[in-house]
Amino acid sequence: MMALVALCAFAVAEETAEDWVKKGDELFAEGSLEEADQAWDNIQRYNESIKQDLEENASAQVEEMWNRTYGGQGNDVSSSAIETKDSGYVIAGWTDSYGAGKLDAWLIKTDAAGNEIWNETYGGLRDDVSYFVQETMDDKYILIGRTKSYGVGDYDVWLIKTDSEGNEEWNRTFGGPNYDSGSSVLQTKDGGYIITGVTESYGAGDLDVWLIKTDSEGNEEWNRTFGGPLNDSANSALKTKDGGYIFTGYTQSYGIGDRDLWLVKTDSNGNELWNKTFGGFNDDMGSSIRELNTGGYIIAGGVNAVYNAEVHRSAGDAWLINVDRNGTMRWNKTLSFGNSGYNIATSIQETKDDGYILTGYSFGLGFQRAWALKADQEGNLRWTKTFDRRGNKDLRSIKIVGNDEYLLAGSFGTYETGDLDAWMIKIKETQ
Image (cartoon, rainbow, N blue to C red; front, side, top):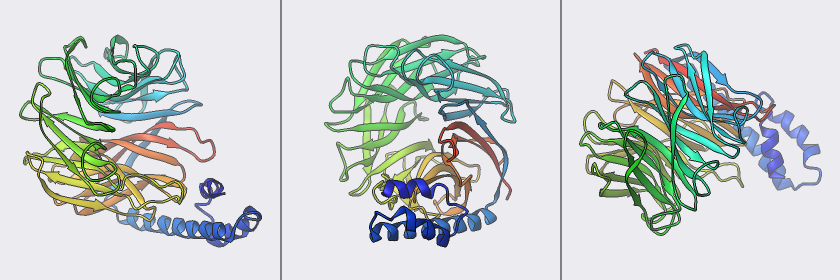
């Protein structure tokens, strides 16, 4: 019965609570009074969240420059977007509208206004996806993800190099008999690549973080695993100014909670220098990390970062943590806004005023919203902006692409069709 409440709540953004209760007479004819009361409570909080969104957006110091979707009749998802050297954009993700298999890795090139120039798919007859894209030193593209069509295991880490038009030049797989997947790839000074992902085929536990170094042709030079007996994962990694690497995600093997945010620093050869955990007794995770201009790192993620489907809400908040170069916490801030209950930050960048721009999504009361926010250098909230309240959506990537201009990428789907399209938005801070 509660599933029915969640489904119907998708369509009531413009209805009053009284309208909803009248419909509830029919919906709950065979249900309990407690379920009807829960539906009433949900719609009251939903209407209040819409009111609060309107108030926040009215004062938001940003304007939407353009908004584009890409896709066909199926589900099409963007997970990463970058500005290219020609001032256009490239989006990486996956599609089941096009290509050869169930899901195929997908690369879309646009002009500066977000208009599609070309798109290419990569994959075989099974599920293949890309999670991250980077423009290479030779003005081409490198993608990372996972493949079930190729390799030797369940899923394997998948590295794809294309030319400037998206034509595949080569691809490489890494993995063993079990689940292995890549989450990010960065080009190194020697022209090779550093891959971050997870592995069940190697390491000490159920799921371990996997760091792989390759040469310029994608041939493995070394690999390292990080983790303990349980599940440990990395969501974001970067090269540090000292020549090493740092990644964040979550750990179940260490810390005090079910999952704790996990931060690991290595040297240039992938040898661990230190690791830190942050969190409480519930689920906490890191989604994105950046090295600060002033030294140290800023991490964005979520505290209590698991949505409770049984009650259609949770107490999760977006989370900012500022640490020094040794991983010691300077400060942390939870960012709670709107009235949906569950907010998680997925991507962060440092702005020219030493503040932070973030994107993420909220989920609760049977609906999902995408948002961007600005925080000052101490993590205090300056403004928030939510997008397209009627629809299934999230934002997974944010990049600074101009003077106070930001590029956001994710996925958008209407309640009417349920299908997702790749989604890209450009916004500008006006003050």
